[in-house]
Image 1 (cartoon, one colour):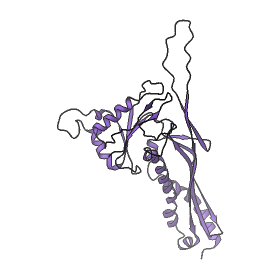
Image 2 (cartoon, helix red, strand yellow):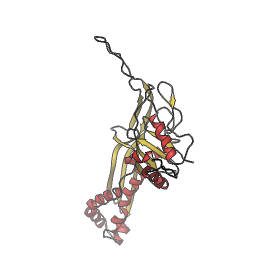
Image 3 (cartoon, one colour):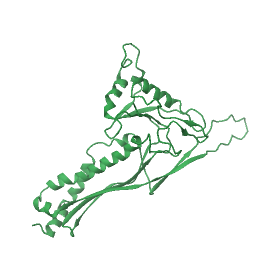
Image 4 (spheres, helix red, strand yellow):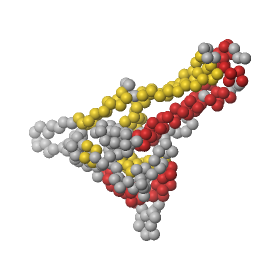
Length: 299
């Protein structure tokens, strides 16, 4: 039977290895959500999100006259709360007694970081997964909505209302609608489509549209204009709707805020004759401005 001394020696001898194994588990694959969410840090337990109007157009200034004065207007606000996510596991005395080698650590400890990675991916992808419903912007509307309210009271849409499945025609409609969006002062804004977010079930259809020289699913010889758009495809199993797809611009405001990066701890719990290993992180996510993305739920 293992003694407390054996347990403590087991822990002290392997503590550097435990830290290394947790890190290896976290790096099992490149993160996906960081490809479509801006990565920011916060020094507080909350983030106050404010919408602020743009400046208007410049006015002609006659010689020796004072330049026109402009003021920004503050729109709706919302507060994002930073949440803590954590998990711990215990390696019992019996496990130590039965296997004093590296098998326990190699097989059990990396799972903590892998679980943390999956949690981050699910939380990050929820921005899109719940964007047609529960994820809201400061104007009180869902991320993808037909009636986003501008500061001047007018409304705009960043959802394709016919909810088409992905196709060349649907993509053309989405990009055209993006390029027609205006700022709060009613002036055109320049939005450049950058990537398409989709479920793996849609990935190949998306790549066919983006990489075909001629119009897809057609016998004519017309060129396919999407072949020159150089759009990036982000396909992820963490997107829950197999039919939904989103076009995202190079300039967008979908943000992931880190209060504390993933950290881990390990200690001997002599009251249980066990080694405890745990990890935690603190984060929040939110969308200060809905412009920069347009989506379809598909059929």
